[in-house]
Amino acid sequence: MSMTRIFSLIVWASTLAIAQDAAQPAGQAPPPAAPQKEQSVGTLRGIFGKKAKPVLHPEEDAKRKAEIQSQIDALPKQGTPMLDEAGKQILDPDARPMFNPPPKPLRDKYGEPRLDEHGKLLLQTKDNLGYDEHGKKLKPIKQKEPKKVPVTIEQGTLTVDGWTGKARLNYDIADLKYLYIYAPGIGNTVISGAPFDGAIEQKNAFDGKTLTVSVSEHTLQLASEKPLLHQKHPASAYVRVDREYTMNSRFPVMGYGTLRRPPYAWPGAKAVSTNAPDLPKEVKPTLAVPKPAIPGTNPPAGNKPGGPGK
Image 1 (cartoon, rainbow, N blue to C red):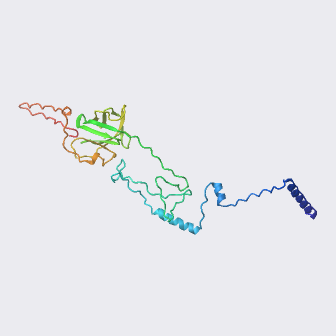
Image 2 (image 1 turned 90 degrees about the vertical axis):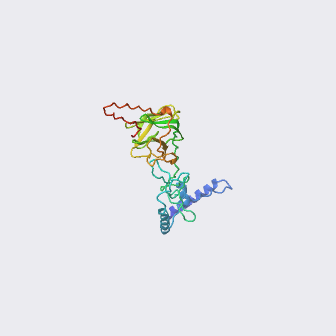
Image 3 (image 1 turned 45 degrees about the horizontal axis):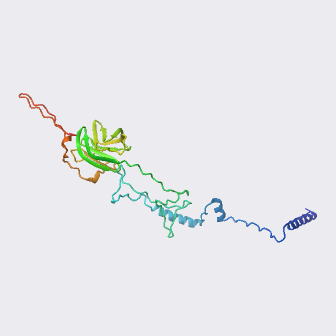
């Protein structure tokens, strides 16, 4: 470029600057130049909406991760046993011990385990689950309380194939899980108002003041002076028979509990009496009078009346 051309550009720029200054009102300072933002942690925070993760030296970061991992590996793999108010081990419906969830590290929004001021690993609590390994917020799962099934048995009578096995039964069950009816020769019949593994539905088994279930060729019935369920319409019963279960009793036994497999939690865990109950006269069976033997003939083979299982 020639010197003449360069000189012309300089003159033009000077003239333009003088014209801009003349157009600006007197006494007004030129607007300050906008500060140039630096590419810093603040800039990254504005872009991503999160506080930037601190960057450590590779060797320090590796050492820190190794220490944290050693604390995680030392955590128990199984939670503590679940105990009831009396300090007794709680069992699930299949009679297996129940445990609390195993401890897990409390993580921050970057998915990293959190430590206290002493470098000790912080653990999740039921109200503070922190974040998962991918930085997603964890929220406690609200479990809906299942609907309770209250059952009332007042002056009840238990019959097996029409024979009275128990009378004057009185139970006030706040929430029925499983009802047990044991009969010699049949086993333990487990009855519930809700489906469970191995159970067969018997429709309209709960019908007003009676509960009637069929077990193979046998009929078990529980009758009460008041409706059993706190509802007007009939309801299904779900029935499973444990034929291998035996009790030290020659007579039917009824109870209820939270287990559907042995050992069944009978109320009070009392020993079963082997004596027949004192039944009222109106429910006692009437025995047939044996016929006299005819002289010169063999006496007829009479069948002794017996209860269930005999």
